[in-house]
Length: 118
Length: 116
Image (cartoon, rainbow over all chains, first blue to last red; front, side, top):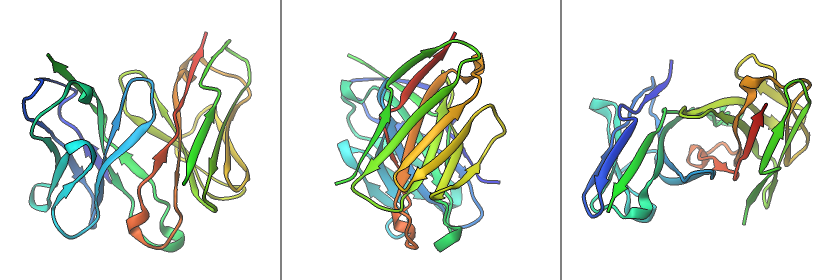
C-alpha cells in the first residue's frame, strides 16, 4: 500500500539557518510527489511537485526538494529560513494512472510543524 | 483563474444536529473534487472524492456523506453530528485530465467545525 512518512513531527530552527524536512514514501510505480504548506487556520498551498525529469525541483518561496529513488525520499530544503516560514508542511504522493483510473488521490504524511526562532 | 470557496468558515454545532458544508469551484469545468478532514495534531484524511456529478467514492466508513449536485459543487453532510466529527474540513479540486502532470490538488480555505 502507498504511504508517506514524515519522521519529524516538530522542528525548530533559527531564522537564517538552513532547513531540511524529511519525507519517505512507499509506492510501487513512479511516484508523483508534492510538498504543501499550511499556515494556521488556512488551506494548503502547493510549494513544489515532482513528476519526472530533473530530480532537484525548485518551488515557490525559495524552497527546493530532491527526489532520491534509491532512498525513496523527497526531502524539502531551504538555505535560509525566514520567520514567515513557520507553518506546517505536508509531503504527499499522488496516485498515478490515466483517464478514468486517474482519481488524482493524494496520500499525505502526518505533517511537520516548523517553528522559527528569532 | 480558478478559485475554490468553502462555507461557512467556522461552525459550532451541538451533538445530534445536522450538518451541511458547501464547496464550490469557479473557473474550471469537470474537476475532480475531494473532501478531507484534519483533526487536531493529525494529518489529512481523505473522506470522499468525486470524478463527476452524482459520482461519490467514500474512503472511510463514517457518520458523514457527500453529494455533488452540480459539476462544481461538492457538499458534505451529516444527519446527526458526533463529538468525533469536530475538525478542520478541507475541500480540494483537481483538473481531470489524462496527463499526470495535472495531478496536483488545489485546496480551499477550510471550515472549522466544533461539535459540542
